[in-house]
Image: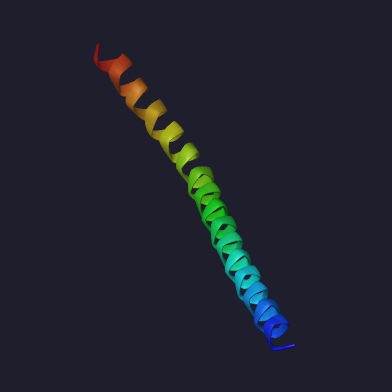
Length: 58
């Protein structure tokens, strides 16, 4: 009985670690997607501004 208890406890710890790693990975993906969604319009706006100034200058 003691060996089964240790085995179940070990599996529970491994499952908890795997779950934590999965949650951290999902959080990182979401943060990366949010940063990408914010960065793309800003870079697009800056590109249009620089392109217009370059066309006016040359």
